[in-house]
Length: 371
Image 1 (cartoon, helix red, strand yellow):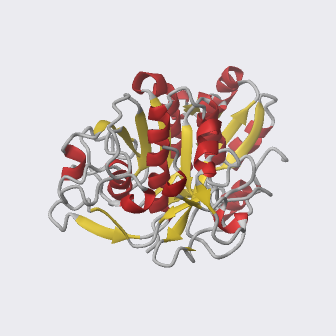
Image 2: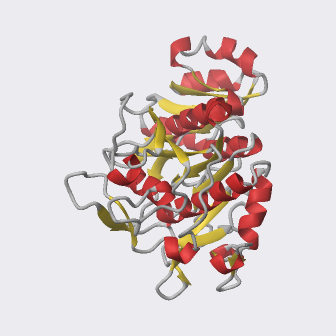
């Protein structure tokens, strides 16, 4: 039973031996498929080869049976994931930059994306993947994803450039993996990560932005495993730290990963760490890594019949700012690895409190950007 996440057992008992979703890590990915297909139909096995795992929904007897397979390494629970909004450009020094036309892509995993003018003129979204409702056209039934994408790459067309995104010239792939409530299951997020992994060369995906999170369930947390697999494949992963501050050790997954770039929220008004911004440590590592503005940020409204711009706060707003910075860094030097990009970002930070479990290396400082 030491192969089974204790959270699974609690969930099963709470449901009266009902079905629960889980992630099954394997020693032998192909062999495990043969064994697992005896527990659930093959068409119900969700395949995640990029982390050598499967997504399964089954009862306690199925979980116990899987744990007895030698090819099964560990069975993790699949917790709910939530968007990390809390209820600028000029600061980051991204205005009036020289256009770089290197054809790289940033992937955004979120609630989708609406056809806002700032994303249509010029067209920013080169691919839309809907893992919730399987629709083929761009849409956002929550608004969080549109806001995040606008911060990343919005053209500012509606505002005459005033509310343009961090990297106005980057191509974006939007993957809808969160529902109309801004929530979703880990299995959907892993499917989004798997899609990115499978298509990274086709679309030249170099950066992924993840403005969502869940409470980490340990070093085998599926979101952390997935994010680190993307990182190891050459993609810069930027994640929101979470909005559970000022409590310590409140960083969300996948931001709790030691590898990826985890972003906390800066309140530009008084140059302080936002009270709600999650704090470290995360598994004995300093977190977050960097701060970016996250309080009262102006961004795109997904409701095309309403005001074009609205105001939101949260580390969800901070993460796409750093993702946009990363995409510009990669376009300037496409040979950089994720670790090298992370070092460049951290080298441009200025501390406020000098407590790395509150602010990491500090806020991203435009004054330190190399000319």
